[in-house]
Every structure is written in C-alpha cells, then in structure tokens.
Image (cartoon, rainbow, N blue to C red; front, top):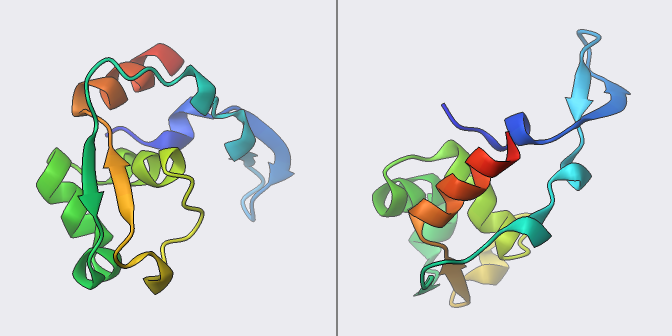
Length: 103
C-alpha cells in the first residue's frame, strides 16, 4: 500500500520503539508535476468530517492520496474553517507518478 512516509527520508528523532521517524520536510513538493488538469472542488461539512470517504470516492484509495491532497493544498490540519473553500484534486496518475519517482 502506498504511503507518504515511504518517500520521506528519516529524521534524527526516534519513536518510542527506537526507530527513526520520517522527516516530513524531506518530501519535496516542488518536484510534483501536474501533467493533467486538476479538479477544483468546494469542501462541504461532510467532506471535512469524513475526508477519508471523500478521498476514497474520488481516488479509490485513501492513505497516500489523502495526505498528498492536503499537503499540495497547503492544509496542515483539516478543520471546519475550510468548509466552503476550494481545493484542487490532482489527477490520480500525477500522484502515482510522483510517488514512483520518489521511491
């Protein structure tokens, strides 16, 4: 299963098991290439509370796509403040290509 942590470099910080934590700052979003038009979508209250279901219905998968959509839209933490705001949903093939180029 794809996950954004697999394309991050390790930090110097350890978790409670003594394993290196991934460093989110090493995820180079400037390398993301849009080759197809993104979809523009206005977030509803339901989308905010069940963002996982929204992403699942759009991409067919959740984990990697959910995180990447939030990161590419510069949303650090999804709150009700985002109801009614527009986000861009990159084409699934662009997200997949970025993942493959990074691993």
